[in-house]
Image (tube, rainbow, N blue to C red):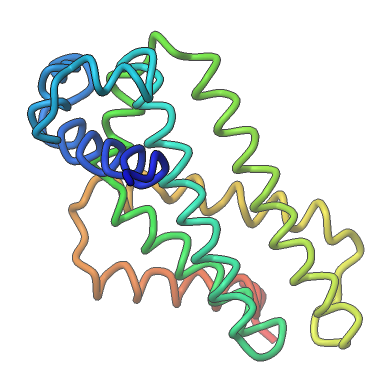
Length: 195
């Protein structure tokens, strides 16, 4: 018996590859169906439109990235290492999804409400992850912070500001990304004041 969830996952995997290769506007339901080796009507059984498929692809990829971040953070020992794991996993994960995010950023503008909702949801999730790390660090007397929420917002915002120059532009090689993230973490942990 065919499992609906497995077929749905296959549609999303094929669709992601096609969206990444051709972009949102040039991709058709026929392209996705052909990639699956199925008829277009069978794709419509699982999704109402190309937009629905794209939304599902984005939500799945962001969910996978969030799960990887949570896993890396939970495996790290201590708040400092957890914060480092968060930063590295987040930025490397975005680099792996760079083509999909370029499509989202440049071509999926007609779905502005969806992109705004996704961004707000991921921002909130990331702020909560970072805040829990900071709270742990304050409790363990490793971090000295007055307001862990505002600090978490600042960290997430700083990382978002680095997405385009470090991740989306793909100008930098992997080693450069890691070196840049190490420098960012040094500033984060030790500040910029001479001591």
